[in-house]
Image (cartoon, rainbow, N blue to C red; front, side, top):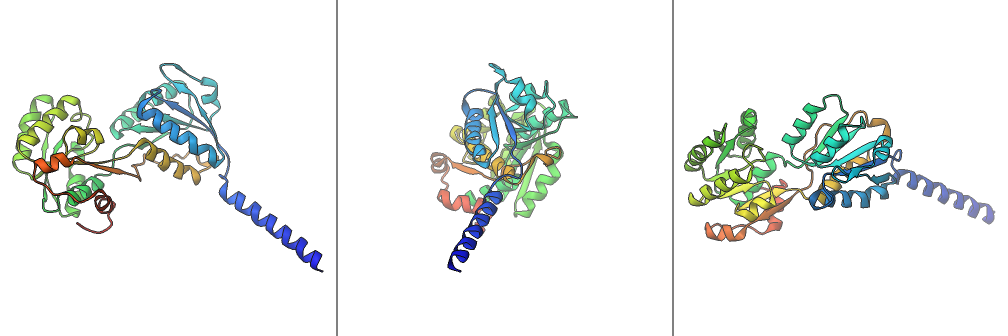
Length: 310
């Protein structure tokens, strides 16, 4: 009887182990091709982080090169899913292959241009643009006493009503000026800085060129108005603070999606996704120069995530 009981226990343990293995494995293993725009920098950093972890989910992951050095056309043609790190990689893949493609390390505006150029493609993206609400939460956390927020609108002018509603929901008033060309930048900038307490910058292609960014930084510093921006580079250049996503975090967000996705659903790619993860950067030298006392990074992260109110 003891022998029968031990034998039954052994089989139960085996079945439990098999059940756990099935739960941990992806529904169906995928062949995933990863193309990069450049073989260095943030594009490759994303690819390295993604490739390291995707294989552990049971998928077969292949790095297929970059446009400058050539792409492995055979591997791309056989892939269930192509991950393109950057616009150049995506454009090169879409020009020659009709495979489900997810683009990463790309701004939403550039992805929309890519989608317009390939309207029939099975195409989506994990964009770099943080939700505006998250940027505004950082603003409130860094500058809790300031409510009049200046914003220049270029190619994103159509979103003005939505942006103002988002700000109002957080107790902020958005003061906007539209910019339709380079000649209007300085006049619009002076106008918005003169009637606001802090300047918000968004990743608008019309206003994010090095020349435009330099003008925005110099004018805001002359007016002694801090800038809440969208990249670490902007903070290094002189903005007060920014919320952004790293290549490794983009890879992590995409891997979380893959854990619950299988081959049968790839013809129904999700709509473009904003980052779930984020980091913040604060230029404390700028804060001191402007006489602003800023909370520590841990507190800012908590408030930016919406955990409590400043």
